[in-house]
Image (tube, rainbow over all chains, first blue to last red; front, side, top):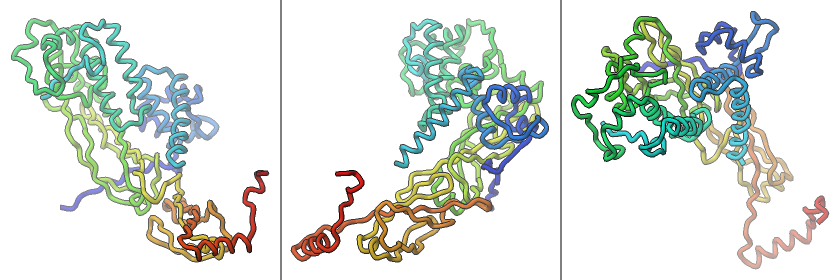
Length: 99
Length: 316
């Protein structure tokens, strides 16, 4: 029997989604997205909520935030700090590996 | 079924207070959280710690667990004695809000759905989308360069008819698109955790990382390689074969090249249908060791004919 290979959606630098796409993909409310934007945790492009666009970076940051809140009870400012430090750590790991 | 020593998992004694149990759990949960800890076994340790806490934080479950006594060793084959839970009045639900997917058979047998109030069975009365699942996969650079098909096995929790949660291996065949780069993710809709009450399944997110490669490393879309050349190839210029992820190609070394010089092979990196990656080749000059008088003389001759102070800029 021939195997069926799944082809998913590649979340690369080109993917953009609207507020409602984002909410259904991450399973969160629009209100939570607003809170995360207020906290500076994510930065959509576009002027008002109807024109907002989110990239794969936002999707990843939101999903990590949800896990940090659920598993470690980190509040939103704490999540923003953790995410920024994780980005920095990732950059340092990359530099160290490629040295 | 293997016995699990929950006290050992949390690194505490059997006489630890509830406060100490909580503190040990919080410390270890932070340490092993898979978003923070990149070690390969961090996720399984994080789950073990969560499972241990799920039992030990609840005085009823802890008392029931303690009944087995301290003589069991972790990993030892274990069968609970019949009616081991008789005489306890279990008021709480089996699960207390923790994400119990991936808990061990040991936990499921003792505290799983149905036994401690059966928290899971109630969930069938409402519809809920399954949780999204996240996994990391390691692929070869060649697979990213060409695109490939991968077969992977993940563990996935399923709920059977009696409300028990079982962890089962879940095999997936996935197409990896050409030009995928490290850190990017593939979203597979409906391949995550099963939904409840007829709700849709969650999604599966696969994060890509690259296995180490003896010849290349990747930075975003670009591939880096260090190419060894001779002094005369560097000085006189030459066309030499250089490995790329798509096989050897010829590279023109310009006349008068120095060690460390970087040359670009356009489009030989991780290119997708719309984005182009390049390969950068850093030159490393291999100096032949003079093995006899004639060869030494040749170097002396060069020193005489081509005097140079390469340290002039440093003032040395």
